[in-house]
Length: 461
Image (cartoon, rainbow, N blue to C red; front, side, top):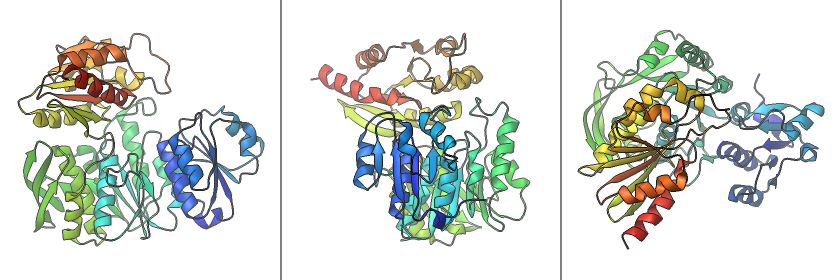
């Protein structure tokens, strides 16, 4: 059983890894409820300073005594089970919760909406949040990216809705037990945790089974995995969206623009208006469709939802324009699965127009690289030139014989330059006015965008 939010009143929560994006967001929401919060991170940061200003007791080091006096300990998946604070918590026999379990508790006094899917979770949950805000509903939210409009990834709203991004990567999204959920797509990923596509399918089925009886499941009719998932569901209100005939929210007359799109939208056979977006790509048309379908299912007015979607300017690291220098545009994107790479580069080619598309890609995890070598090579072929950095290991140990060179070996437009500075210098030297440069990947490749921007400014000064 989930812990009720009321049980945390008068208690102290200790967050191990409190400086992380997800954990810090939960800490802020807990503080807004008047709950005592402490926490630690491996190093100091502006995030820790901000939490301290809100009343949290934070520490820029992991030390066992910092757990003493806590009532609950919450940890992120980035934290080792041998962490001294987790060891101390076990010694004290304290309740130890994952981030997902903690988020489930924070949602217990709200109508919760969980946004799941292999791709598009962050953007869809962000779109839904902004659209609901435009309806005056002021939802609480906890999202895996920073909303451009507010600069925040988590917030306690005054309304009774709570939008949460539901990460499937470790199966923990079964903790949420939402009132409603979106599934954007179901595809094999996180191969370190899910050995086969069937394992992923089972995980999503387990997640959908946790939706409260008579709740809503909004799914993409265009995606075979999502449609198959919905076909086996009972005792839920099913809402489909997409460009497939018969979808409850049907999208047609799509006009894809360099940095946006328009489309006609029909809700259960009746035209309700034009959906205008300021983020590019067919995939974002579908993401917006998911958000709109959920809002309409919950009774939100169509006109206000469409206005909210039209005002959406994106989230951090999702096709984010970082700089324009001498007609050269630099985009940063989090895409790290072949499907995500493909749709991002299709949108980037449209954005580039007559200019070239130059990409610096950093594969994320050795296990994912090994599983999708050929798929990455094919997806990256959409660019004119691609520099591949070495694999970002995350928490994995290297797999013998698996490096970024294994991808380059299957490409005609690939260059293996593992050194960050050399890769940046190569890109600075190659770029011409009109080109688009994309830094792509879920690791730390985004750190190159300001280096390239500064280098281009010097080159063309």
